[in-house]
Image 1 (tube, rainbow, N blue to C red):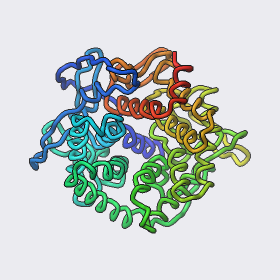
Image 2: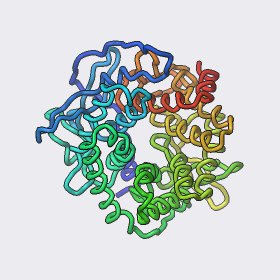
Image 3: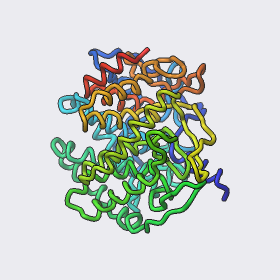
Length: 434
């Protein structure tokens, strides 16, 4: 198969981008925020929808798409109308809400979304991703099949974060979460942990083959984040976290003075913004493994690459080649810019601030988060504090996709929750916003 097709297939599995679909439902009411918080759950609540699986299980999903100008909810007949990839991240939004501990409505939404994730786990322990409008599971689609892919790692990350919190208020659901995690972890130990640590060369770049998708540092990052809460008393998982972190570290190219400035490539010789949680995961791995080398590598990307992006313009993706004397840029793209590409950088810069208490990282995190509030190439406010909507992307310096689907909404809310957790980052955001 040609490299271009493999890359296209991989990128398709990475990101569920909006497509045209005719199915409509009710329009969304505008619910202004009742406080000064940047986090407004109104649009996410609107995308939330109860479902009943064909097994009889009651749960809830998140509509994938919401189309302007009336923001009617939309599904996709080919893939489905809701998916684990979005539902898992919605669980994290609700869990991280400061209202979670006291708001039973938020708690119940979280329970139902978790039920959805649990119901999508297959007999082989991996997860299917999409649910069709007739409430049957999409078991064959390339972005939905039950294999070692994004949606399974998203489920792991959400469930491992949710488990201890849910156990305090819903023991029976927590038991189900633990059972699902145990199945998936056993599968990871069988399928992924034993992979030999071999490398290949792509355009002069050393590429580790033991990462998901053959070299997916982005997916490896989510696995690390999902496994850390589970690995304290598990030597195999601890060793695997180190193995994944080693693979991510290999994919870091350049340094403080040489392009691409400590960037961690996403797949083979390609970097893409969306889902690039590698720096954040390395910092978390460094703390968990008590190994400063991983922390320093994560912070190097924050220090060098993120700063370069802010000075030279946010990118959506690029390829690089090692010509033997330097790393050179190929196929640079500035658009589309999406929330899923900005939030990972906000996460990493905020983590650097948490670890060091250095105000420069708070300033950087706020500067990056200001993308949502107009500090972007289009000069457009992408996230509305009044409605809780985040537009689906910036197509060019003069064009914005005004739809507001699940992924953009959720990623914006995750970013705003981070900002709200750190007053210094919120101050910086207000300084840079337009």
